[in-house]
Image (cartoon, rainbow, N blue to C red; front, side):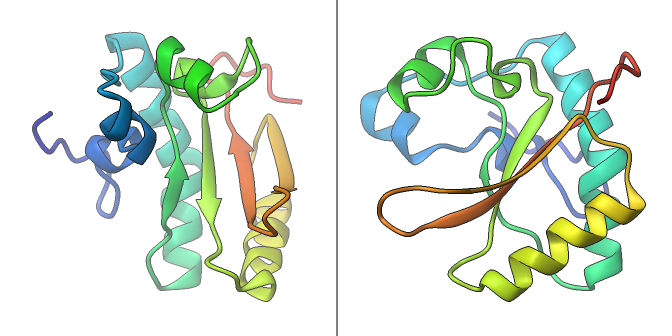
Length: 136
């Protein structure tokens, strides 16, 4: 997939990158509507967060094709499959994750904002945005 810039600091490539997709040979190419949704997520949440923090925000999971969503055990109606969600890696720094979570909560419109973790003790911030304005 060629590098397509969605904003000053985010590319389509990084919002579609997946180690699981690479390892399993899964195509993870978004459709046009998915790209429009990713642009809205970047514009309304990710880029404002990046500018406020003043340092890069690493995306752990953005867009997921159906096959990739199934491979990672995502829920069947995951907003990742529509380009409406991203998981933000905090790289073991819970305080950084809390700052991101609190900043998004206070400054952005969003549909979901969840502090998540897995059994391995990895934490991330899940955030979603709906372009249709039906954000919760």
